[in-house]
Image (cartoon, rainbow, N blue to C red; front, side, top):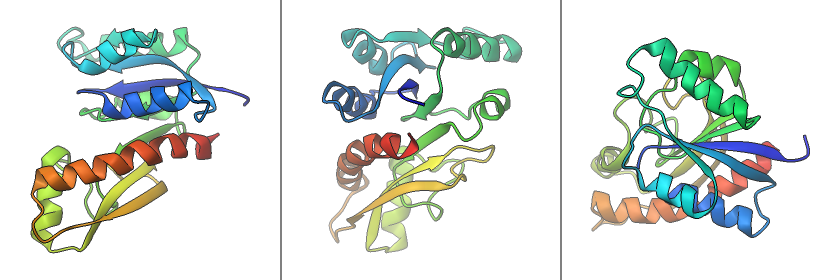
Amino acid sequence: MSELSIAVFVSGGGTNLQALIDAAGEGRLNGRISAVISNNSGSHALVRAANAGINGYHISGKRYPDGSDFVTAILEALDKHTINLIILAGYMKLLPIEIIRKFKSRIINIHPALLPKYGGEGMYGLNVHRAVIRSGDMLSGASVHFVDEIFDHGAILIQRTVPVLSDDSPESLSARVLRIEHKILPMAVRMFL
């Protein structure tokens, strides 16, 4: 595989997507971002994609209430761009099992905590940072892992840590972890290749 054709799935603002776009522009990605898929029509990630000349798709359960139509829409977008790596970068939905099985070992996710301790359903956004602070742990961080059929469960590719400070709020810890996410996600793509 000489160059990856990448699809990035995002639900929100897309700062990790921007980190990938920047890494690609600097020659640090070993691939091209061919498509951005969001379940949220108002996602700023779709604006980031358009600004970078990347094909953006809004594919959601609201647009495709029939589950099989939803899966078909995703697969058509992926097939159109000959995608061979999917990156979940703040995608707040569990991928349909058909997608996970078709792209087995070719889907990675960025998670804003150290797995496996702070993973699973409900462990996203500020929820995960609240849990870390409540636990009294001295370290948090970010993890990039392969996606399987269970939330935040697949093999870990890379992790980096940040200290949890005594005066941290979920927001301040989140900001520090996000800076690490922006660094390790492009690194994980290079590791995948």
